[in-house]
Amino acid sequence: MAMQRAGVQSSSVRWVGYDLDEHVLEIGFVNGGVYRYPGVPPEEALALLEADSIGRHLNTVVKPRYAAHPARRAG
Image (cartoon, rainbow, N blue to C red; front, top):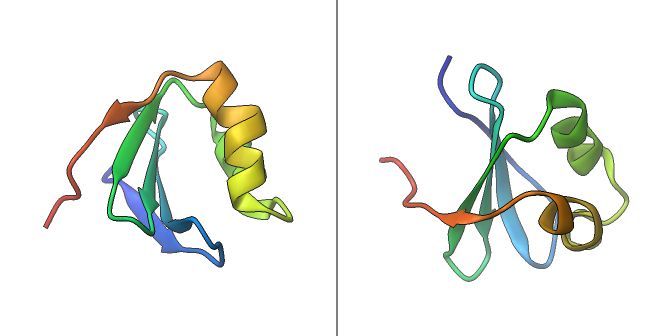
């Protein structure tokens, strides 16, 4: 399955992507940066999308638990 991306309402995050087969979370930031977080379970990705503040959730829950790798956005 390919990376599924969705635009989000956030001052720092433009879109969130998730690959269900690979368990990879991908974040596209407003500043143009794109980072991949391998090993993120589906329920954690969903919790990010459902958070009151995506940026806060990313900084307090995702970043401390999963290593980020810079990525380039596909096409």
